[in-house]
Every structure is written in C-alpha cells, then in structure tokens.
Image 1 (spheres, rainbow, N blue to C red):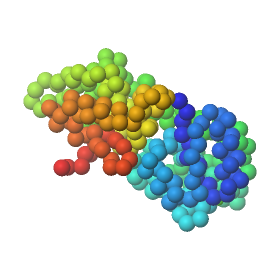
Image 2 (image 1 turned 135 degrees about the horizontal axis):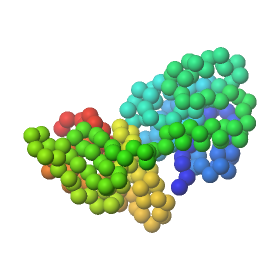
Image 3 (image 1 turned 180 degrees about the vertical axis):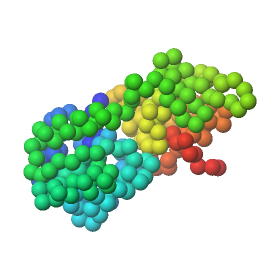
Image 4 (image 1 turned 45 degrees about the vertical axis):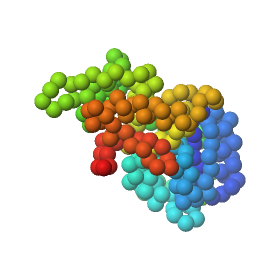
Length: 238
Ligand code: CA
C-alpha cells in the first residue's frame, strides 16, 4: 500500500510540484503550510516520512525537526529537509537538528523522489533481518512466531497469539514508542482492504491485551487518546 509523505512547505507552487511528483511515484501525500498545522495533522495521520522546508512562517523547519526528534512518538520519523541555495552552508545545522537528509532548492523532482525512496528504505518499518524483537520482559520471535515473556524466578512463558494479534504485536514492537493511528495500523497489518472498519483494530488490541494481562504486560500497549496506539517500554503508571 502507498506510503504517506507529509510535505511541510509554505510556497504553494513548490508544495504542488513535490506533491504531483510523489503521487506519480506511487506515494500518498498530505500537505501542511507550516509546522503547527503539520503537528495538528499528525494527531490523526502517521506519515512514513516528512519533507520539511527550512524556512517556514512561524516555527522554522529546523526548530520543528528538533521538536519531532525530542518527541518519542516521532523520534524515528524520517525527515528530509529542503533548503534554499543560500542556506546550503547551514546543512550541518539541519542535520544536527535531526534531519536525515536534505535537498537544495531548486531541485529536480525526480531526484527528490529518489531521495525519498532511499530514505524510506533505510527506515523500513518491518526489519526482516531482525528476527527477535524485545521490549521489556517480552520477546517476539518472527521465525517461530512465538511471544515469550520473562517471569521473575521462573521459566519464561510462551504466549499463544492469534495471527492478527501476532502481526499487530510484530508491527508495534518493530516501531516502538511511536503512535500509530488506526488507519495506519489497518494499512500496515491488514493491507488496503476497504471493507475493514477502524473498530477492528480496537477489537484486536483488546484481544492482544487480554493475552498479555495475566503477566502484567498489557500495560506496555498504550492507548493514545484521539490518536491511536503505541507500544512503549516506559508505560505510564496507573
Ligand atoms: Ca519556505
């Protein structure tokens, strides 16, 4: 399914150019004209990558990149920064702020699309090489399809999960600390099936938690009100 790119650019002609080219390259595109608008949109969408203009009205792209990096929900979000020619000498500042790559204006739209693809490859969400995922006392083995929970002073416990709960857990553990909207989870776990409702996600999260709760591990799967779900190794104490 199409990956979602959020473009934060205040110049409509440039935003339009990028948008058209990325759409042609097979991406889904969302657009914001400034940082605050982007932040607001990210409460309901989970972009796979953000294209961020350096010079924005209000909060600068550099400042916004720093904030995204400081927030656990977005710290692993790939950021590609756009800089005008005169700012090229400042690219180090942009990379220091947390950008993963930068492109100098004026740019070739083809090159930009290639850079987006390359950056997404580096940040590919499901890492097949990583066969065992760990979080807190939990270990998920993607080869044997087994979830194991370490129990103090006892043998580890194998937890039986349904295939959807397993995939859900695999996706969450591959992308820890990040908030995933229901739509994002549907796209990544169920694929692009128009007949599945967002409520389905809640049902499977509930089942997953029920499997984890006897071992006090359901607390790692957090509901983020108004946004979706995340798995975290530092759950909020209740
Ligand atoms: Ca600008």
